[in-house]
Structure formats: structure tokens, C-alpha cells
Image 1 (tube, helix red, strand yellow):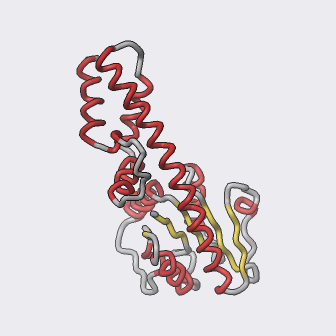
Image 2: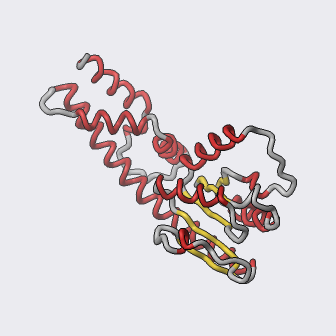
Length: 220
């Protein structure tokens, strides 16, 4: 699972040690895209535009966002809003004895809030989040592949018989093939994480690409 860890950088590094320990915990089972946030000697060496491009690319790749918000940060707030727009599940941790979160976070029911008073409270909550998120991701993945497989079958039927319009199917399949979701689904299949009886011809890049190419050729 790809995790985006959000924590303060320019607004203050007082909690960098905590970020590092949380990231190390997450990395035991999953991939943290932003492991540099926990680097105790972090020094920025790229332009602001490059940072923005990289961080937003990681957000589009993420399947889960974990934020530690004890140290207020405009950047983390932006990342949370961006992730919400993308539909990425967001979990916010903060030390209730040190900070009071903005109402823009506490008032938004999309965000799952996890106040704590000691660091030891964090890790059992993280374990539960990882477990439940994996189940949700797998269920959504299977449902998505089934939908895309049905669209691909309609497209192949159209190419053979031309009996119905598949314009919307083609649009959705083309977007899927070009999206990080297709690659994520393909890699999950390669790791053997999909049910053995799941039909998944749509995860054959050649099969899907060739069907889309044949449609384009037939329709000019």
C-alpha cells in the first residue's frame, strides 16, 4: 500500500523525531512515499515548483494519507485538502495537550481524527488503520476490475459485431489504462493479491491497448 505521510517541514521540525518513528513503523508493512519527512537532517535541494510537482504526484499515487498535525503547517493543510479532493482516506494525529486543530479540519467529517497524549497510543491506532484500509482497498480494487472487465467485454463485442455504442466504455477504459490505478491493480496482480477466480483480461496491457487501438481505427 502506498502511504503519503504528511508532517511539518518549513513550519517547524520540532516533531521530526516522531515523524521518523511513525514512518519506520509504517514501512514495516507498506511503502511510504514521503519518507523524507522523517529525515532528521532534511535539507531542501529543489525548487518550490519541483517540490509541488513531486508532492502532488505522490498524492495522486497514494492510497492512504497519514498526517501528524501537532505542529501547524499550511503545507500539510493543503495536502489534506488535495487528498480529500482525490478521495484518498485521511487520518490526522495530534497531541491534544500541545495543540488545538483548526476548525477547517475538525469540522470536516471526511477527516478521521486521532488525538493522543502519549506516543505509545499512536501505534495500535496505526495498526488498525492499516488493517481496515487494506481490506477496503482490496474490495474496491476487485469491484473496479470487475467493472473494467465488463466494459472491455462490451468493447470487444462491439469490435466483432458493432451492435451498440461503446463511446463511454472507451472513454473510461482509456482513462483507466493511463491512470495510476491501472498500474496499481496490475502490480497487485503480479504480487498474487487478487482472487484466483477474478477475470482480469483488462490487466493485460496489450489486450486493453489493442482493443482501444482497434476501436480508434474503426471509427477514424
